Structures are given as C-alpha cells and as structure tokens.
Image (cartoon, rainbow, N blue to C red; front, side, top):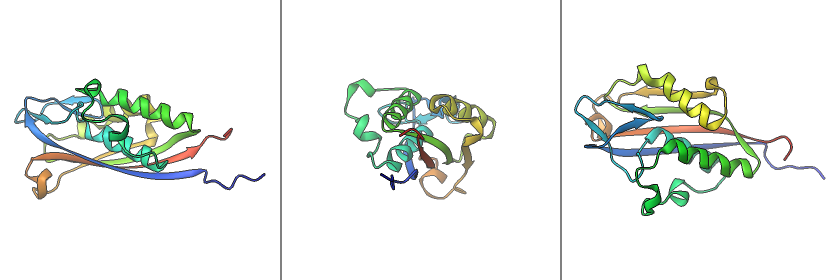
Length: 169
C-alpha cells in the first residue's frame, strides 16, 4: 500500500503579550533588561518567541494551540518556563511521528535592542527542539513607533515552521 499522506507540513504561529512593570522580559529563554524595567505579562513566563514557535509546530499538524495543552487558568503553568513547555510540544509531535525541519521567526519590539541576544535565543531553542542552530531563524524588527509594539505597549512574534514526517513512520 502506498502512503500518500504528506511528508512535509507548514505551520505558522503568532503571539503578543503586554509590557508591564514588575515582570521579567524573557525571549527565547533569555532574560533581557528593558530600559524602562518592563517585562511581559502572562500566565507563564510570557515568552512570545517560544509561544509563537509552539503554536506554529502544533498548527502544522492541526493539533490546536498552546492554550489547549497549557491553559492559562491551570495553576500548574503559572510562571512556567516556556522552553520546558516547548519540550512538551516536541514530545507530542514526536509521538505522532514528526520532527521540526526548520523555523523562521520575527520578534517585533521597539526596545530593548535584541541583536546581541539572538544567537543565544537560537541556541536555547535548538537545544530544546533537537535541531541544528542553523535551522532556527530568529530576526528582530521595530514597528517604527506604530501600533501597540511601536508604542511599547507589548511585544509580538510571528513564526513559521516546516515539519517533516519521520522516515520510519
């Protein structure tokens, strides 16, 4: 019998969290310092980069979104490390016979400047996913002072992932 099911799947993800005082600013597992002392508000650590990547991975396989697996009203996920949640998402897709081929993402934030931290973000994500660091794309841009990101009300992230079915599946 010939298996005509797709061997590749693409998913996209998006996340945005509000900037507030008194919270850490974590992106890709890196704890950053905002010039105004702001951090991202959320039930977990509010890591928009990791959240967008998780949604892209889950979406590629039509498995829903991170709220399905880590509901914001569940106390066990309060202040959770999103890289640990990413590991759990990877376990879900591996059980279904898939793995991440590559990721591309863009973080939209006016401040702080992210370029010095991008390699560390990529390293953190590649270790959790188990892919080569060169298969993780993380870019940063500003919104030119437009919109919620431009007014520094929040930070957002867009992510796209290519998934490949395991050869022995």
